View 1: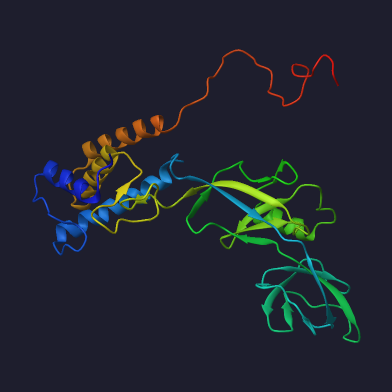
View 2 (view 1 turned 180 degrees about the vertical axis):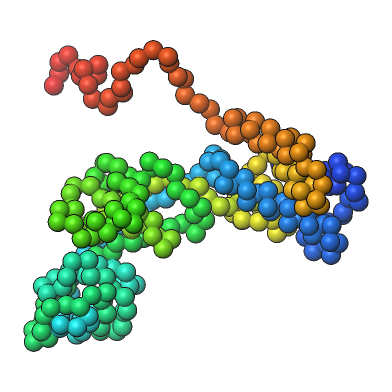
Length: 301
C-alpha cells in the first residue's frame, strides 16, 4: 500500500534525524511546510520525467457537421443579419460567397460576427455562411501529448502532425494544402484540425495527465498536489522519500551528491519496471501486416 503524505514526511524526518510531525497539512512549523512543498516539487518533476503507465490517458472527441445559415456579407469584416449562430462560435472557420479562405470568428454577438479578415461582398443580399469548428478543448488534466497517437477513428488513419507554425501557415496559404487526411497542431492549449472538419468525425489520442495525487478512497489520481495528510501518490514510495531527501539537502545548501545518486537510481529502477518491454530480435524480420499472404484463406472467398 502506498505511503500517505504524512507517512512520507515521517519517513523522511526519521531518516534525516529531525523532529517527526504529527500532521503535515495545516501544520505551521516552517520545517514541515517546507517538506510538504518539497513533496509537491518531487511529484511535479516526476510527471515530466516519464510516461508513467498510471498517468497515461485516452482523449476521444467528436467533431460536428458544419452549420449553414444566411447572413449579410459586406466588404467589412463583419457579417450581420445572422439567426442561429452556433454556440461558442469564436475560433470557428466561416466560408461562403465573398468570404476569404480561413476567415475565423474573432467576436460573436447575438446576430453578428466579426471575422479575422475583411470580406469582398456588398450587403445587398443574403449569402450562405458555413461555420466549421477547427479547434477542440484539451482535457483539464492535460500535461503533454504522447507522440504518434493522434488518429481519426472515422477514417481509420493517423492524423498528420503535430504541425509547426511554419507548416500551419503553409496549410492556410498554400495553393494545394487539402487532402484526404487531417493535420493537427496544439495551439493556445487546444487541438486544431486542418482542414476544419465539415462532418461528424471521431478523433482520439493519448496523453500524459498532470494529476498524480490520489485522494483517500479513490481508485486513481485526481489532484496535482497534496492537500490532505491521507493523500497517496502513483509513484513508488522509495522514489518519493529519496526525492524529498535530495530536494531537502539541495534546499539547505548541503552536499547532495549522494542523495541525488540514490534518487536517480530509484527513478531508473521505477521507470524500467513501470511497463513491460517487447522482445527484440537481432535478425531481420518482415513487417507485420493486417492483411497479407500469410493470412489470406485458401478458399471460401
